[in-house]
Image (cartoon, rainbow, N blue to C red):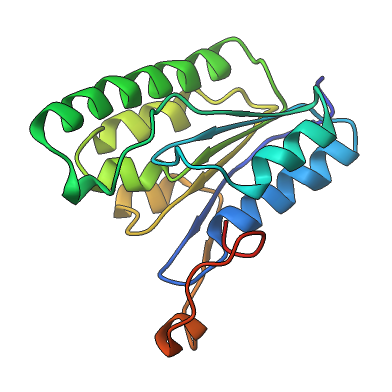
Length: 179
């Protein structure tokens, strides 16, 4: 570990497709250059292609999930929301341990803005993660509707802007492309 002299905080946001894809692509590149990449995926409990890709990449590229399969947050019962809150707390605590223990060179917190926007964590929680990032670690955050304070604190922000999407023509999410 320790291939980065200086690490930065990057954010991939916006209403367009490609936030997770961009983060995973960066992780794939870093892994190929000998860096250790850890991904914590929030709000994702279904099988996706990146889980299989991570297995192929081996020990230097790991994806962590703590959530049990459920529907969309707005479809959940109070009991399911409580369970999800507990699972997200475990994910957040794990992400904090990753930072404090300097366990990887690149840490991707996929859909952390989704859990923030759904009220499962607070803006201060994300800012704390950013503050505690080791100087030689890259931190990647994804998700829509990033609060202004978090945008200001980041070193790089890329907005994915939807201009045209085949979803509007009735094309559903496709395995291997959207998930």
